[in-house]
Image (cartoon, rainbow, N blue to C red; front, side):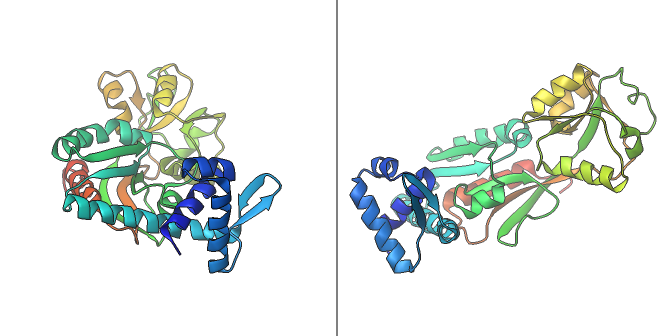
Length: 298
């Protein structure tokens, strides 16, 4: 099995086109075909289905992809470590939710850039697949994620801090003046929520489901800032981390409801695949983010 074969396989898995793959790896299409055929013969199973002009990964191909990506990433990091004398350098791909990326990471980025100018930081704020799957596929080196439960036994993590999460409304909302707001008080209320899969949204949905509580309309957003603005316009009750609305709460533009239900707070962690080689750049980033983002009482 050759490195060139793995590179061509990974590119074809991304492009699903022999023509575009040949262009990306700077070779002719017949060579792409020959390399993939040789790899399939060595593995003893087809990695792609060719249906006319359509190319799709087989189950074996999907299973093999994360291992091929990890092998290529490890070789790349190893070459960089040797060439740079273990000085942090090269690209570092980090996934993060919008709230963490916007409100927690800028000060980390500022210090990291000052100390490690040869590292190319690439932040991914949102992916169509969960971060855990992106780590297994080698699309990310690590991720900062908000979750109380680890998504996979293949993921290693370090706890950073607990983020407070509030139910919020504008000051004229009927629930804003209540001394306490119970889960049942959300019956029939219009909710402004992040997209499905968000951990603190899932916590609220579990609470409502356990109580057989049905809210009114649910409006779903991909942007926490859009939710914040819609709350201020009186469009409903929103669920957001405290860091997103800290200024609005200080200026009393929004009101945090006096929630009397189960805890909505969420744990922020830095995660990576257990088999991932910790490069000097990764080690430096983990050390800095632990120092900068850890709870003050820790």
